[in-house]
Amino acid sequence: MDGFGGEDTIIILAATNRPDILDPALLRPGRFDRQVNILPPDVKGRTSILGVHARRLPLAEGVDLAEVGKSTPGFTGAQLANLVNEAALLAARAGKETVDNRDFDAAKDRMLMGVQRKGLVISEFDRRTMAYHEAGHAILAKSLPDADPLHKITIIPQGRAMGHTQQVPLDDRHAYSKEYLRSRITILMGGRAAEEVILGQQTTGAEEDIVLATEIAAKMVCRWGMSRSIGPLAYTRGEEGFLGEQMVASSYSAATARLLDQEIKKLVDGCYARATEVLKREEPLVRDLAEVLLQTETLDREEMEIIWSCSAKKRNASCAVDLPAA
Image (cartoon, rainbow, N blue to C red):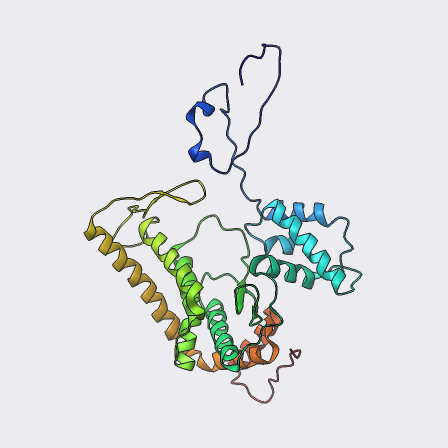
């Protein structure tokens, strides 16, 4: 990177996903002294990227790439290109002449959760457990303030997930309120709470929910200053690298560690109690939603709204639900 004459106009570009471990000599003036962080595109950028990759596809009437862009927060340009390709492949395999919204939805599910495990034999016990588990998530997502809108519920296994409740944010979020995060933990606890309230059991199906809820609670207490007992102080459990990798363990007293653990547990326990309270109050709705899920296996937003409406009318004879068969 040296030895060129003054009249040479050569610019060297380099990329890395680990700037935290670069030799400082590389970053001195006259070398790689300009750094640009490339972040995932916002909703406007995602819509534009989708338009570029989908311009050669025969899109069905009603396909709105802006809506697809809204439903893919955090996707990079490469992931959006893959989404369009997957949607086109799914449409071709189904013998369609155009790519519609269902193809984009299925492609997104495939990317996020994996391929549907169609040959998997599931016992009736597991199906009922999954139905009530996902119903718990969905009802809390519908009931709690600041929660992202519901998009779809399914009990069809995909990848490692045996079922899934999908929420789609209205806008990209760059800052999260304490109430939103508490609602998020409560929704994650809804699956286990529904199993206990309705079925009187605990299963391993809540593992991923519990892990994620604990991680969010730990960040609220240790990094974001959202605990009154701890205050606006940061106690990271390890120094994080560029992509969140733990580099060097932080040190603080045993008394502080105990207080942090107590606050994390208090936060998660409070959210679990809130989830249990809501689901006990909405028990008829939990049962209605789970029973419909057992029949159809997948429900979209419009179908869920019909079920909410029917439950509000106490499932009288004038409120018949006409949903497609599984």
